[in-house]
Amino acid sequence: MSTEPRRIGEKARSDPRLVFTSLYHHVYDVEHLRACFGALPADRAVGIDGITKEQYGEHLDENLRKLSERLRNMGYRPQPKRRTYIPKPGSAKGRPLAISCFEDKLVELALKRVLEPIYEVQFEDSSYGYRPRRSQHQCLDDLGRTLQQRRVNHVVEADIRSFFNTVDHDWMLTFLRHRIGDPRIIRLIGRLLKGGILEDGLVQASEEGTPQGSILSPLLSNIYLHYVLDLWFSRRVRPQSNGEAYYYRYADDFVAAFQYRQDAARFHAALDERLRQFKLRLAEEKTRCLAFGRFARHNAQQRGEKPGEFTFLGFTHYCGKSKQGHFKVKRRTSRKKLGASLRAFSHWARHARHKQTKGEMLARAKARVQGHLAYYAITDNARCCNRYVYHATRILRHWLNRKSQRKAYNWNQYNDVLSAVAWPRVQIRVDLNPFRRAEAC
Image 1: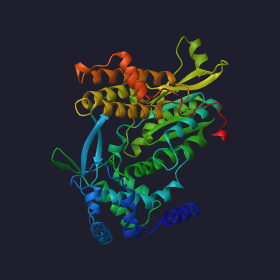
Image 2 (image 1 turned 60 degrees about the vertical axis):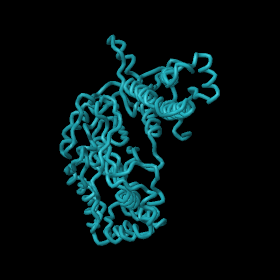
Image 3 (image 1 turned 180 degrees about the vertical axis):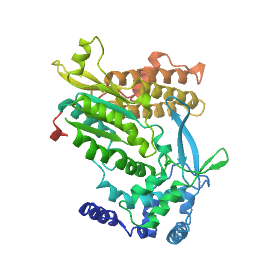
Image 4 (image 1 turned 30 degrees about the vertical axis):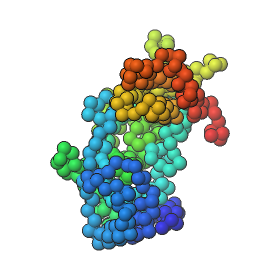
């Protein structure tokens, strides 16, 4: 099976209109399922049956054979997913995640490995989310250089309300049939979409949405928005614009940039109707059209106003200046994300003091700070990163000292401990200078 994804991708690339009518045998191939078993991590949360990878692997050959037979005979039925919640800024309940049983994860990964080569050659360059060799930093880099180097004067910042919970299943399967002509693949995906959610002891039917946390969900969401937004922009919006027009999407987060205000206003006005056509809703309070570009600061100052800013992928983009006084696109950690990160750090430290030693807390806190800096320590964002490290350092000292009043750290002792564990310092991890030439990236 190792060469099959490459062959499928080559066929999809050579004939963009080819409809694949025989794919299902790849999904239930025992060796393919075995490779998927090896690729799945062992430390993930378990589904409603409580079976871990280690337990499933105790009788791996027999389990894979039985799973393959059920898939081949269309007797496979996914179990309901277990609902759990993770912290989400602005939400008391949190972001819902759906945890699949281990065997369902095997099937989801097998499907993904078969479908992904077909759609990877079809997806637009404007799509960056959950794709091989593409990242949020790459999306930010390309957007920044477009705003810096192209004729951009207006930006439309948009947000889809509860996208993953409102994906229409009928439209999803309709989009899949454009390239997938094997009815067994379509039927299996339909079963996975409608598998149900277990929450508070009750199983709720899944009539819409593609559950976050599912292995297959990112690919399905990209397919859905490929037809709803990506193709619409590249084939309708951009050709009908009077000036330059650009569009960048990461998962369900996207922005569009235009040369002329009329083109931006037209896109903004048409966006809600386009989404409603496919059973999606625009979050009006988070969607707006603003002036942004090399002339935005000067024009805003003439009106006695501040130049507009927009938030994308956790960063607030604003019109800044280079050392020579020229226009420069700059970014800083959005206030919402910075506050949420510090609250999450404080929540962790407050609870970790009861369960971990001081050494364990220091090691884990260091890893959390390093993780934050790995994403947010980009060009022009050192000030916000220093603010995060400053507050995180003090939060950690506070809760370390609450472990035991007899062994409290004073500041000199605490600084010595931080030096001993090589506490992270702020330095730019990712170069997103918009003045870089594209060919140097």
